[in-house]
Length: 292
Image 1: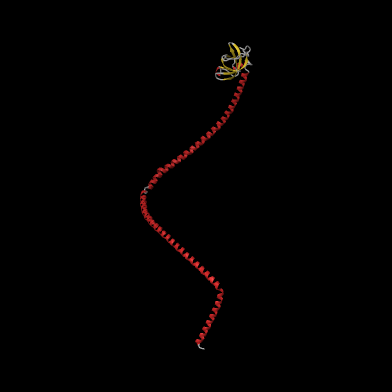
Image 2 (image 1 turned 180 degrees about the horizontal axis):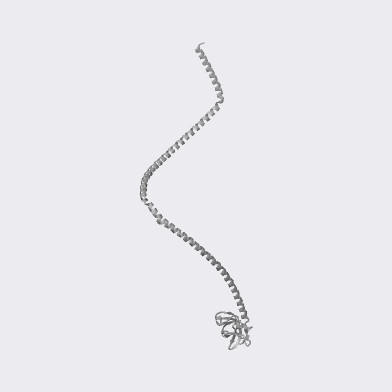
């Protein structure tokens, strides 16, 4: 057999084999055609969605890049302004440095005599201040010592005063008790003076006679125009007289400087009592029996 024929036969066999495979594939594809269609449709939809998402991301990235570019432009402008400011500051700093150098040179010239001034200051001020501080410290210590001594003396004086005050209070209390006892004795002597002539001599009832006058009468009480300045004493007896006759005998119950209030203790006649204007006279011990 010729070679070309062999090749032709082999090609026919291959074509038949391919056609047979195609037929089998077509038959199998007809069964799964709907599923493949749906899968391809879903894949296309996913690709479409992915494409739209990529496009949206592209737009967002473009907008972000534009915003970043605007911000970068603003930052560049701010940096340029800052650069100009820094350059201005640099020039001012250089000028200030030059001025500071000139001022430092002038200051150096000005402080050259400082060493001598410092020495003079130490000798004229510091040493004198130290001496003065030492003297003031000594004086302060002396003052504190004197203050302590004075405070000690004051405390001792306070202690002495407290002791003496306590003694004074005891003496005052003792004097008060003695005064109360003396007043009580005087009161008892005054109450019983008319019973014993020796008590009258002791109290001075045998002294000068006191003449007075009744100022007013109210019930069983009356007042005479003689008092402590005239020698009237508490519980002293007075005879009330009218036209030389005895009306009543009264007892002094309260004594003022100019007047004395009395209580009627004996009345001669029940219908004839004392009146304003009647005479009052000191009642002597020996006169009480005759009512004169």
